[in-house]
Image 1: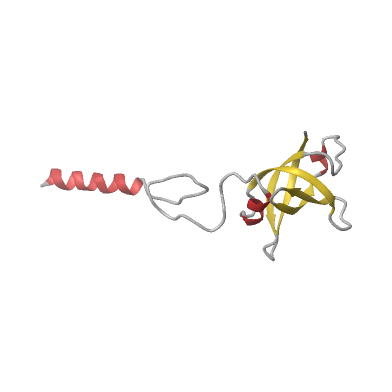
Image 2 (image 1 turned 60 degrees about the horizontal axis):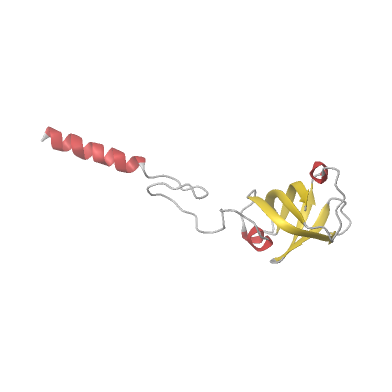
Length: 127
């Protein structure tokens, strides 16, 4: 009887060790899964517009224009759509970029209090 209780206790401990919070695709044996916004690799504007705040992105496309009067905000376009990007000064890395230049940007989603997303850009690579 004591062996049966010990084995049952061990089985319960093992099962509970596999359960837990499922965060950004990290798999576990069970627990909470937030099926709301994408958490995987974000490679298109369309995905970025639906992603969570602070989600890393790598997008390839073109800067098509300035976004209003702000010196560091621009409209970025890829085949799936347009999004405003906020480019950190160091991200330019001495490069001059025109609307004809194909670029890859790396950064993260920035969602404001109204739920509108933009991208904080930390790196630009010209092709």
